[in-house]
Length: 324
Image 1 (tube, rainbow, N blue to C red):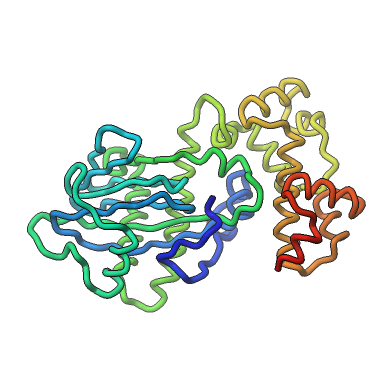
Image 2 (cartoon, rainbow, N blue to C red):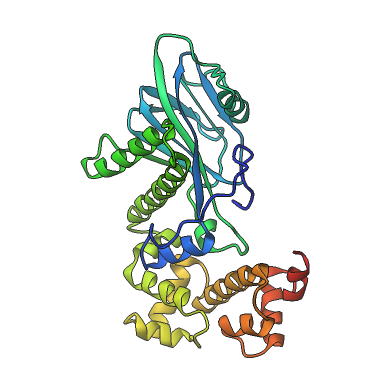
């Protein structure tokens, strides 16, 4: 999931750096996964119009800058009405269509993008019009980390109806403006603003998780988020469940039970996955020796590191390095 560059953008985008997000568990993992995002276009569509998006290996989003639209998904019976200021996102790349009428006639997103790039908008004539901003986001994935496992299929944020989201509405409109600008440096600004927008969408979803289970619920829990951040920042540390629990102010049993209940794996299993994610990236870079990489993720010998790596990744460190 999210490990292939979308066909509508062949350029390599800069990854989100520390300037975008701070030092917390969500920031740690988004930096490590190298969030990349950009916007395809911000365009006026005149009715009748419609876009059909197939299932993808990356996330997509739409922002209704002006006007209205209807959103339909294959697994839902009723279309969702979208008005000015609405943002819809599909973090797992779910198939959907967006149009001027419920279940309207649509063309594929790839075909529409190609035509717009040629300045041949197929929906450029009519009376009632909608301005739509569309974009994508993806991650580099080597290990099935819980953040990606628990990504929501669909997010719908009505920025015009929640006063607390005025800042998000302003951000989205700024992005829409830059997407249509011809000023120098515009493409870099669009990439950066899109990355910030996606992070804010994920943060909004995280802040809604007041109960239940899943990785976003863990991020919203002060104790679990602290424990995750400890693992992220000190992967080579000789962590035990008892040490983690003591650091976040919980008993060993209470911490272990809460971690497993919410995240769906033990603290040490999560630690192993995180270590191998880091090791995978270091091996692909090919700048350091095997023993140095092993030590950076908490192993004293190449043999023990290689065994753990193959168990989680499926190939040995040597095999991965030879795949370059």
